[in-house]
Length: 100
Image (tube, rainbow, N blue to C red; front, side, top):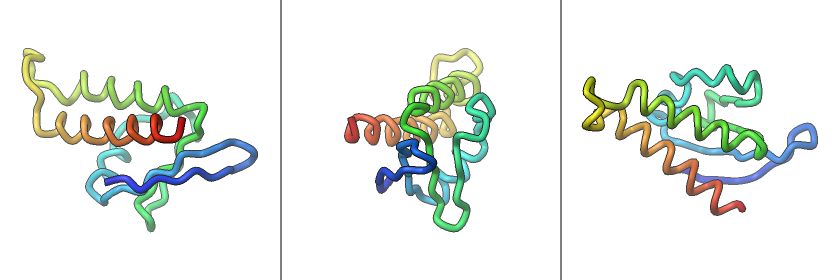
């Protein structure tokens, strides 16, 4: 489950997602390099900070991860890994719409 809060870093509004260790490790396994260094991971608190302006791209990257690694080979069923990715995506989606 995500606890949410907004903070400002260097003038940018940030979404901070406090997640379980399992979801934190899952998020860290995803390649967010497209966002350069605009996704910050805090290993001690298991939290992820994403600039508000980047949240849509963050969600697209998770969605792409579902398509590439979360479906069976024939893409007809969601794997257990895919269900975890969907859970992560849904939590980010809920945060985005709660804060808008």
